[in-house]
Amino acid sequence: NAGVMQNPRHLVRRRGQEARLRCSPMKGHSHVYWYRQLPEEGLKFMVYLQKENIIDESGMPKERFSAEFPKEGPSILRIQQVVRGDSAAYFCASSPATAQGGYEQYFGPGTRLTVT
Amino acid sequence: EDQVTQSPEALRLQEGESSSLNCSYTVSGLRGLFWYRQDPGKGPEFLFTLYSAGEEKEKERLKATLTKKESFLHITAPKPEDSATYLCAVQATGGFQKLVFGTGTRLLVSP
Image (cartoon, rainbow over all chains, first blue to last red; front, side, top):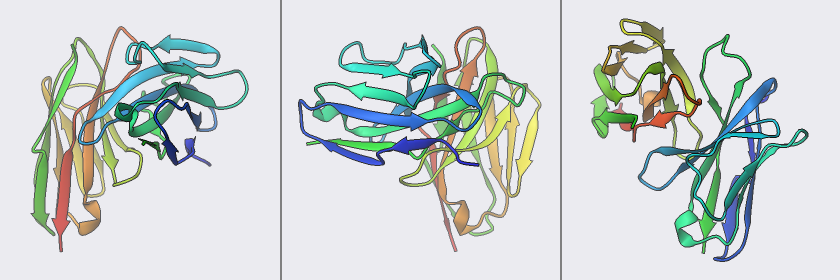
C-alpha cells in the first residue's frame, strides 16, 4: 500500500546544471500534480498531468521548466539551467481518475532542491 | 483570483488547551475545501475535505467546519504530538483540479 514516492529526496545542483525530479503516484492513481514550496511561503501549484497529457500548466514558469507523465514510468519535473531562486521543496501529489472517493490529493515526501 | 488566508500564523498552546484555527477563502465556486497537516521536512498529510456550508468532519481531537466564507479547524484538548503546520486549501469548480493553499498555521503544543 505504497503512497506517493518521490526521488531523490535531496538534490544539490550548481547554477546552470539541470535538475530532474521523479514522482510515482499512488497505486491506482492516474492524475499527478506538482507544487513548489519556497522558504517561508505556501505551496504553489505548478502543473497538472494525466498519462501522456498536460492538463493545466498555468503555474509553471514559462522558461526552463517542463513536466511529463509518460505512459510508462514516473512523472518527471525537469528544470534546466537552475538558478539560486529555484531552491525549494518540490512536492508531487496524486489523485484517482474519478472523484467517487472525493477530490483529495495525496502528497509525497518532496524533493528538496538546493542550488549552489 | 482564488485566495486563502489562514490565521493566526503561529499558535502556542498548553497541552489540553483547546483552540481554533481559521481559514478564510474567496473562490469563484467552491468544489472543496481541504485541510492538511505538515510536519517539518515532510509532505502534507490529508486530514479532511468539506464540500458545502454547514458540513462538519471529525477525526480524533480535530473537527473541521465550513461556512460560505471560512472554515475552522477546532483542536480539542491537544497533545504535543499535534504540533505541526496546518494547511488549508481550496479547489474551484468549473476548471481544473489545482489546489490553492494558504500559508498555514504553525501550532506548537507544550506539555
